[in-house]
Image (cartoon, rainbow, N blue to C red; front, top):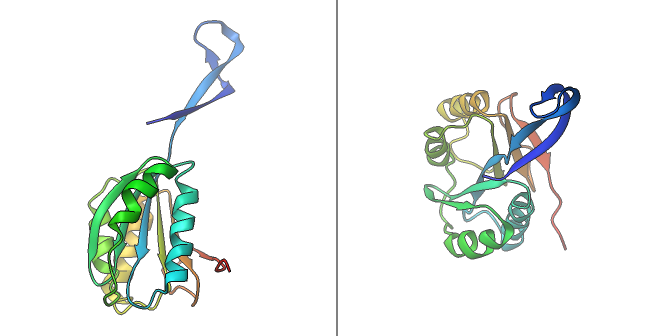
Length: 169
């Protein structure tokens, strides 16, 4: 994993002592992108979702899962070129829309210090009860959870942030 370093006066320099700032390191964030590829997603919407995924890959290590009524293979990408080479060829879907299998897949991961982003039109058949409880549980385990939409207002638990993106024309 790549690391970022910043100088800070909160830590002393190990080599030069108290009179000089030390360094604090941050690792590259891990972002889980759950991309809705169901039949209700148009080509333009899917293109917008993948454009957002591509942008995120410039500053994060990605785990991308495409989903419709089931969750497909998790694909790892550490750069924009890997998004093109690894993620785009693995896009599957076109069926109904049930998010629970995708949530179940990432709930098995260590989400500490991770960000979870769900890209969808939020026309989801199983968005009630157990699914909302699973979303709440995931949000409590990760650093941030974000619901991204191109259409309707996401009906997600309060501990999820909501973002609406405009389609590129």
